[in-house]
Length: 110
Length: 117
Image (cartoon, rainbow over all chains, first blue to last red; front, side, top):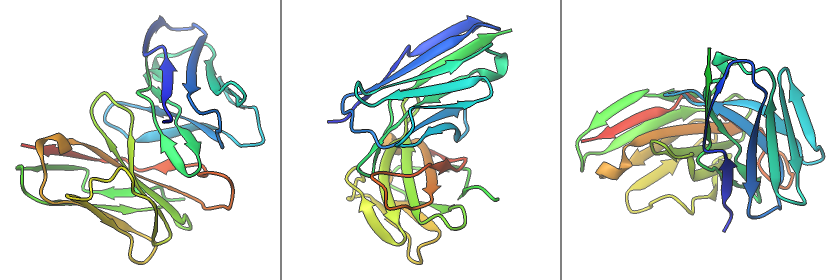
């Protein structure tokens, strides 16, 4: 059974810190990997998509990498800001299944 | 480009009543997903459509939940009768279909928050 584990479950940091969020899958047969953020009471916003042929993707202060052999993905956030406070999610997608973990709740203090 | 539209945004009902949610995907997106997100958890996929056909509904409680996408565009998710444990946010997402090995990039709507009293 495919499971998604996100570490840490919660994180509180002062503004300006560089952060690493981790995501791991029990089944490494990942097709593509999409990172989302979810603000309280809102839907999911797509941050980055790592296509099946890629190993990483960058957008502004965000960089995501995917290691299919180990079934792990990492989201790096540089110079964190209070506006980055949200829950971050990295669902497994493979074989037309989409499975979410509980996410990482991030709070960036001003 | 317009995003995924959902309505209503909020709904409060009594247990054993019925409720329906509506979703209109991004234009041209053949794949449509319905998710249930209980407070403090990640979304759980209930059903996935490819055009008007069901790709996966393995986690849909079929004794009380139903969904349709008759014309391959907008979709309706219904709960009848509702239970207290159905209180959750119901999210709709869509993606552009391709013949790859998995789902394409998904775009989510704002969700419908359901409270069952």
